[in-house]
Amino acid sequence: MLKVYITDLAAYNNGVLCGEWVTLPLATKELTSKIKEILANGEEAVDGFNHEEWFISDYEWDYISLSTISEYEDIYKLNEELLYIGTLDTTTLKAIKYLLDFNIATDLIDAYYKSGEVRVYENSTLEDIAYEYISECYDLNAIPPIIANNIDYYSVGRDLELDGAYDAIGSDIYEYHG
Image (spheres, helix red, strand yellow):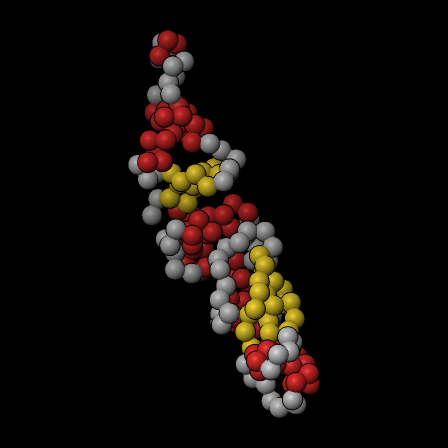
């Protein structure tokens, strides 16, 4: 789900890039072991002294970039969050990203709990949403064709977005009821 490049800080400060790509989530023991291995390699490459500090020098999300990762992120907390949300479907992950991007949620876990309040219309337009909205409110077959055929769904969709009910992001439309 997330790959992080963990770098030995002491080695880095001595001009040696000593690190490794680690795919999260991992079992906590495996993560601790991997960090110790990276630090041991740094000790060996630089000065033989005990190295204790590390940082995340790069990261890559596999499918959906859920959030930015800082250099000194609490990797154990991040790993725990990823274990928690690691089995979620794409739509839920999109909802989580939406909540994080718009600062509606404070972290991944908060976003997970709020994700049920987000409706994601995948591969939709605001016109599609406007049509669905109007057809739910009115029986379009009962409206004279001269009127029904001239409804401006584009403008209605635009107004729905301006009202703050919907957000168009890429090819998806997001609706949040919080």
